[in-house]
Length: 255
Image 1: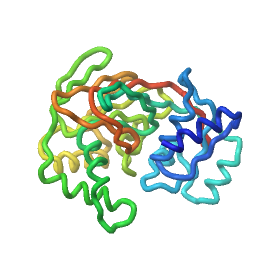
Image 2: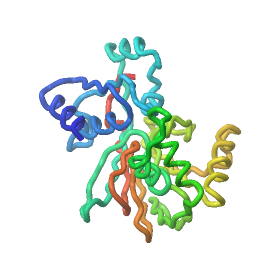
Image 3: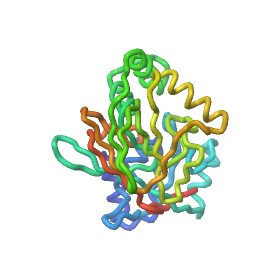
């Protein structure tokens, strides 16, 4: 969390713009240093994307050209975006983390955890590919309890994603998501088999995603009778139960 410390210190010293050179994990740390006690950014955020997935850069439409990216960061263009806050459990204590892309529990969080201990010589994405191949044959659906503002649901699913942006893992997973609408899109990957579920999801996305169920909400609670990890922006945080809420237009970014 050193990037969190650096970003927070820069904002507190009066810098109006903090620039991250990196990917989603580094951006997540910086955002956690920039959001103040009032739930608003203490400084603006600029991004020069050099990460693996670069989901946030895709979500705010940063140019892929390094030269164009740098010129944009040096410009006066600004846009306000929502930030998600997730409260989870770690070491028996309730903790909070902010996120800008996607959070969730189930397969996605377990995949991040497994990737930490996996090596596959395929470049930066090698650990994730290796972890995916290792987990898919035996991964079972989990029991989730979801509490929305107006109802509660018990779901058996492989994963529950709480999406702020459109991209997750470089994939256009949530085409209708809007970083500025004050709402999450909650996506559940329901059982048949994991591979079939993923194939059906991607096929639905290619066909205009009519078969994917999205629930829009500004707050959500997730719990499970079994211990399940929680991730945010690709970083494993702790475990369920977790509470999610939107901070509308909490951060100004160069975009």
